Length: 290
Image 1: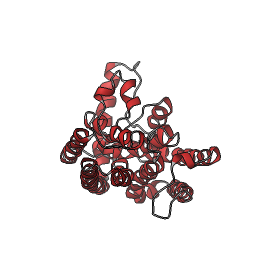
Image 2 (image 1 turned 90 degrees about the horizontal axis):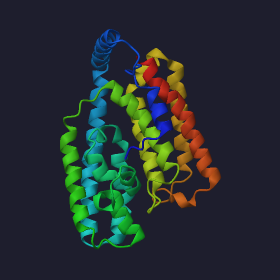
Image 3 (image 1 turned 180 degrees about the vertical axis):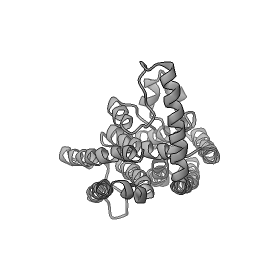
Image 4 (image 1 turned 120 degrees about the vertical axis):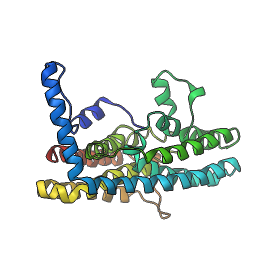
């Protein structure tokens, strides 16, 4: 679930293409809006192939998310704690990769992906808590699936509803470019701190998926970026490689990742620095594509 921190807002703000000051006159605002609308429409038309490719990617990810969620729910309802724990981190990766589109639905995202801390910050209580992280609590904190059957049924229903509604999302170049930055912000604000998976400590799976989601947007737009700024394209390629190479150090023999609790302060510092180094050129992507 998207975490709104000041740093996140600042970083994302550097990419948003349509921001304006409140002191502008109404006439100036109207003129500016008209110009931006025209520019945005032109941008979408020029990048239609890239937009279509990215939407296909997101749909594929959410197809797999629904399938894996169905397996997860089956394990929960059958009382198979070990199987549910095995599926949990990998099923969530499909959601984490596609968050720029999945989070467009402000009602479904918290039902699927909210942490209890997210709800409390918005004045809600434990009785409002549903989705993956509530079942994560049952699996790792209570070591049981008993009592979570209805939560599992609702999770699957919400996953299927999300998949159906994503067909209606209008994907734009702005959504893609701000989405890539938002994914890095997600890593900076919750994954690198271990706050996302506070019971399972499987944060590095989400970390990797967020980076892969951002990298997919970059590689989809890469030919256009190279035309405008070859140096930026090369810089992004190198910085993504640096993050992925660093993450590879924490892979396990079964293709997963070590628990967050196994990381030292030096490890998290190195990961945070690599993400920060990537975030800077990534925030330039939207600016040069104006």
